[in-house]
Length: 215
Ligand SMILES: Nc1nc2c(ncn2[C@@H]2O[C@H](COP(=O)(O)OP(=O)(O)OP(=O)(O)O)[C@@H](O)[C@H]2O)c(=O)[nH]1
Image 1 (tube, rainbow, N blue to C red):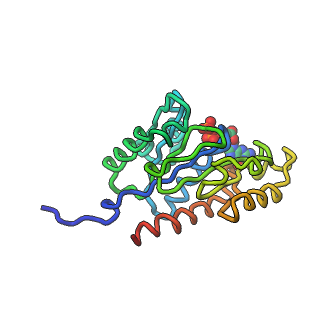
Image 2: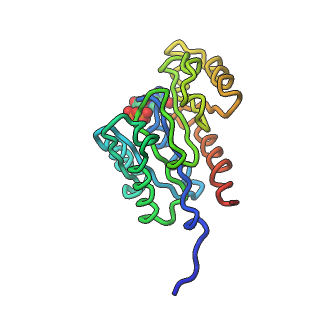
Image 3: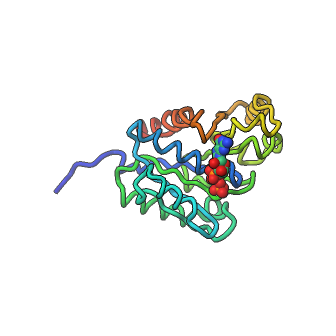
């Protein structure tokens, strides 16, 4: 009988939710996070949530960035927040199946379907969750103080490169976001170029993976 076991498989992988409005750049961010975690030799899996398709999962599976088997799709069939907050059973089952299929996975990223500023994740589903907004959605988003902006563990302001083209003073938007979040973390990102993505990885590694390994 093999009596050896590793601590990680007992504790299970860390689970991180990624939410945000439609088109804010959640999938584009994940496309940059995959190689960044691979470079640090952190094994990841992805669960995507779409309304009635598997669009985001198909995009990631075809990207060549990750073993397609490590990407699972949940079809919400309803308002996206239903399956990440009210009844996250489908996502919890997917995460458990992912862990059975790939016991080496240390981190599962769960991308919500695009939803409004009020979406939040159940803490039965994730250890921490992050929210992606973008400059093209308007520089007043932080002022609207939606739960996603206020309560997420990490807020990302994406499409920094587009700020001059949509009349947004990026630094002012960033400061306002910091203010409404009472200085909790905000990272400026460009999911196309990858700017800021290392900061997101650093955050997940130091606040989640490191703590989990120590507990
Ligand atoms: N210029 C620019 N475009 C970006 C950036 N990030 C994402 N995009 C583009 O924005 C569009 C939407 O990005 P997605 O990653 O599909 O957004 P999403 O949040 O996953 O969208 P849903 O899954 O539909 O909610 C795509 O055309 C991306 O190429 C960025 O930082 N800069």
